[in-house]
Image 1 (cartoon, rainbow, N blue to C red):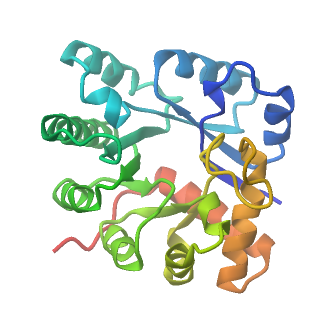
Image 2 (cartoon, rainbow, N blue to C red; image 1 turned 45 degrees about the vertical axis):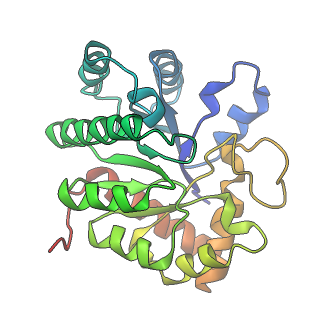
Image 3 (tube, rainbow, N blue to C red; image 1 turned 30 degrees about the vertical axis):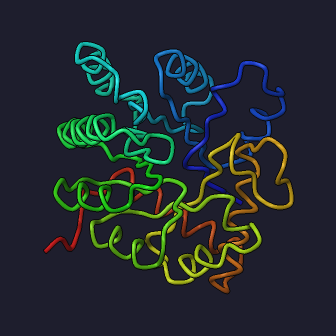
Length: 258
């Protein structure tokens, strides 16, 4: 069964168990998120060994971008043109830890800057947003781009606004947690052709492994939960997500922005 993990951070840890990578090879695709040149070098090494197994995302994380000088940002943007980089990400807004208005404004500027780069390169983006839905929605409405919302955590109403802007919705381990009623309803109401799956590993570990480090192999538990909520077989849900991810990577933006 061809499971898809659109978003993993397994490259962050040099001391991760060797079995993590071996088990990830059973998936159809694993998204490698690279937030530094060091991450990117490791991702390229993995892709050389298994060219069809990995998609690579490279971007400036919100908290990094708020203090990064223009020369360094430009160095990132030049590399984004590399043919092995499929996605610009994860980019966006992180307000949970950052309360300073000046730093938040810098995040918004760098976010928009990277959307512009992605559009010039005709590449999709992966958005991180935490405690920043109002500004995130404002930006994606004013700066259209093909993309996904990584580890979706919002309401049904927010999800619907994202979909109107042409975005895919990527669900992660929290949909398996107790008391995740808001997220469960978002899954139920998300159109089939907009659903994606991820782990955000080593974070957000799904039940039944919650409390342990996450890994791409566990995305099957996310997909199983989505299938349960959508009342279809797991293999059918897996095939839908696979088709969605292929379309996300290749299809030009369509949106309903008024």
